[in-house]
Amino acid sequence: MTKTSSHTPIHVIGGGLAGSEAAWQIAETGIPVILHEMRGVRGTDAHKTDSLAELVCSNSFRSDDATSNAVGVLHAEMRLAGSLIMRSADANQVPAGGALAVDRDGFSAAVTAALESHPLITVTREEVTGLPPEAWDQAIIATGPLTAPSLAAAIQARTGADSLAFFDAIAPIVHTASIDMDICWFQSRYDKVGPGGTGKDYINCPMDEAQYNAFVDALIAGDTTGFKEWEGTPYFDGCLPIEVMAERGRETLRHGPMKPMGLTNAHNPTVKAYAVVQLRQDNALGTLYNMVGFQTKLKYGAQAEIFRLIPGLENAEFARLGGLHRNTYINSPTLLDRSLTLKGRPGLRFAGQITGCEGYVESASIGLLAGRFAAAERLGQTPSLPPETTAFGALLNHITGGHIVSDDEPGKRSFQPMNVNFGLFPPLEPGAVVRPEGLKRFRGKDKAVAKKQATAARALEDCARWLGR
Ligand SMILES: Cc1cc2nc3c(=O)[nH]c(=O)nc-3n(C[C@H](O)[C@H](O)[C@H](O)COP(=O)(O)OP(=O)(O)OC[C@H]3O[C@@H](n4cnc5c(N)ncnc54)[C@H](O)[C@@H]3O)c2cc1C
Image (cartoon, rainbow, N blue to C red):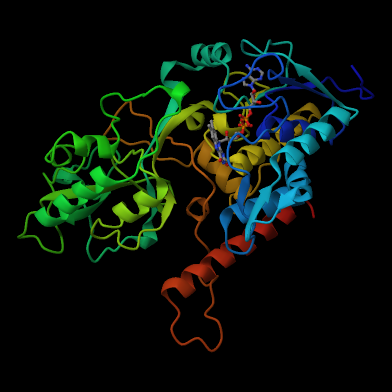
C-alpha cells in the first residue's frame, strides 16, 4: 500500500457514483482509502465497463439551475464541498440546455484517473462477499441498486428479511400544494382514528361513473415500459401495477385501491362517489402525499397525463412518478443513525442508492456525506451533520428519518427511494417570500417560483456556513 499517512485506512466497497465520491472525500482529508470494486472480476446486469462511476443509463445529471431547482441546488452544494463527481462532470459537459449532461466515457475516465492516481487511494478489483470484517473498523458499503447477491444476502441476514428490498414498487408522489382542495377532502376511511391518526389522514379525490370509466380506459391504453430481461416480472399480490389491475376487469380498481366505501365527500355529502383515489401523507412535513396503491409501469409522460384526469389532481405537480424496477435498498430510517451508520455496528456506514436515495447525483451526494462522516470519526471528531435546510440535509433527513410509517398497514414498508425535491425541505420561515415590487397579484405560479428561489438561496447560504466557506 502507498501510503504516506499515519492513519489506518477506511474501506469503501463499491466504486460507483457514491463509493467514488466517498473515497475522494476521505482521501482529501489525509486518510488512506482502500476502494473495493468488483467490476473487472465480476460484472453487473447493467454496467458495461470496468470504469469507476459508470453511468448505467442516461448521461444527464438533470437540471443545473441552483436558483430554483432542487437537484441544481444539490449540484451547487456538492461543488462547494469539493466533489470529484461534480468536477469530473463539469470537465466533461456536453450541450443539454439547462441540464448538466456529460460525455459518459470522458466522465468515468476522469473519475477513474483521479482516484487511481491519488496517493492515498488504493483501488482493488475484488468482490466483497460478506459484511466487512470487524478488522475494517471504518467501512462504507456503497454497492448500489445491483449489489452482488452474496453481499446482499449477508446484509439481509444481519438486518432482517424485511429490511432489504429488491424492487421498487413506487406510487407517484404529489406536492400537497398542487392538489385542489375545493374538489378533494381530508378523511380516513370510516373516519378511523387508528393508533397515530386523526380520522382525517387521507386526501380523497372523488370520481363519478363516467370519470371512472374514462380513467380505466386511459390506464388500459397507456404506454408502459417493459421489464429488463434480467429483472424478471416481480408481480406479487398487493403490489400489482395499477394498469394491470385495470386490465383484469372494469370493476377491479373500484373494489381495490379506488373503493369508495366509508368516505363522504365533504363538498357534496349527499352524492356518493363512484370511485375514490386516496393520497396518504408521505413525509413528516406534510408537503408530499403519495397515491395509495398506484404503483405502475406506465411511462412517465403517460402517468402525468392520465393521473391529471383524476378530479382534484388536474394541476398536480409530481415529486416523483411511479415505477417498478430492480433496486436493492435497505430500510434506512430503521437501520441507520443520522450519520448513516448501521445501528449496533459502529464504523459501518451505507452510502448511495442502497440507502434509499435515487439518481446519480443523489447517490454521489450521500457518498460525499458518508465519506466526510467516516473521515471525521477516524480523526476522533464527531461527524458534523448538514443543516436540514440544505439539499444535503433534506436528502439525509429523508433517508434517516423523514418518512411516515403507515399505521393502517402494519408490517408494510413505507420507506421508498426518492430523488431530491423541494418537498423534502423544511417550509420557509413566515415572511421569507416577499412580493416583488410592482407586482399587484402575488400567488399561483409567481409565488411558487419565489418560494423555490427562497428555499434554494437559504440552502446555499446554510451549506456555505456548514462548510465554513
Ligand atoms: C438499470 C438502471 C438504470 C438507471 N438509470 C439511471 C438514470 O438514467 N439516471 C439516474 O440518475 N440514475 C439511474 N439509475 C440509478 C443509478 O444506479 C444510481 O443513480 C447510481 O448509479 C447509484 O449509485 P451507487 O454508487 O449507489 O451505485 P452504482 O453506481 O451502481 O455503484 C455500485 C458499485 O458497486 C459495485 N459492487 C456491487 N456489489 C459489489 C460487491 N459485493 N463488491 C464489490 N463491488 C460491488 C458495482 O459493480 C458498482 O460499481 C439507474 C439504475 C439502474 C439499475
